Image (cartoon, rainbow, N blue to C red; front, side, top):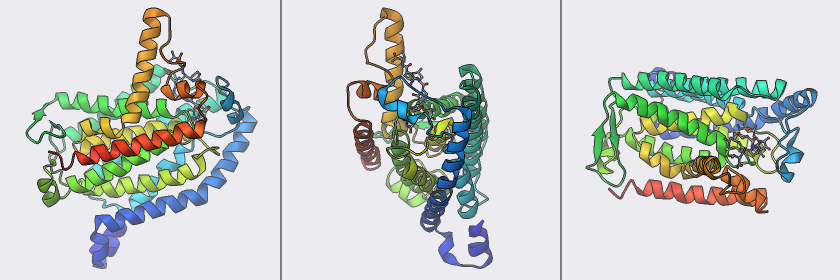
Length: 353
Ligand code: 57M
């Protein structure tokens, strides 16, 4: 909104720039979070006590988390919405698609969290999955039919390698969005475990979005040029600010969890961003942590069904490390370290082409 008022109406040139608006979007979301989370945590804690708490007693170190409130992701969505409306251009199609994905998956997650709070059982896997596919299909079709978007799949490291998937690209997009949403959800089992790699991925993708939206830079770095994707960087900066604000309270020992309200929506947004910036393959590198967590579940379940034995002490893999006796915060910080390295590897694909 302020772009239209300050730049287009009052002619203040400074507000034309994506970098400045991105920085302001980050600060806005971060400070709103710092102010509102303490109030929200207090209210949700009272509610949690009233409803009897939600305990995961499968690991000793999780027994103390019975009254830690969930649904912290709700505020991430609201803050991002506010900051985006303030600092993004209203005439950017990609920003609206991202807001749709953030809010639709956020509401679905909230529904699940709310049911868990009230009846200890969340939505059935079938209902959750059906809605995820529905929302992902809506976003994918919107992108597919947008005239300034193409259905080409590009590969990192090889500038000549790309395929036009045609209408199959819609199926591919749905898969990416739903898979990323669930992968972040599976990862969200220790304080700061999901939000850390998510924010590192968001930072890397804000660089990709900025470059992809700039005709000169993208040509220089052999990156596909996506007209309008620069504005996605402003949206991602808002998400970075909101996520950092959440991490302030989710860092060990957590005062609040993001719940499905956060994990489903942040994951879906990450997937959509990878699609918009035409970096779907790079997502598997940047979000390598989410890939490994998901693979650990697939391997564990398949192996268990086939042999009746387990490969990991417990899946997802972060529980395996906990069972080995590694302290929670050590696991989490090590995961962040790996995630930073993966983001650097992904960013290096910019030059190695
Ligand atoms: C979410 N949710 C946490 C919190 C968070 C197929 C199967 C592998 C699925 C998987 C699963 O259900 N994953 C989805 C896991 C829960 O966190 C809440 O859920 C939200 C995310 N959706 O935001 O609201 C608990 O995690 C802990 N936590 C933190 N800090 C945080 O910042 O400590 C979360 C966030 C919280 C808290 O204790 O209550 C969860 O784990 O339930 N299932 C599993 O992960 C189960 N694994 C399993 O069954 N493994 C078997 C299978 C694969 C064969 C095996 O290995 O043998 C584990 N979960 C449960 N019991 N409940 C292990 C056993």
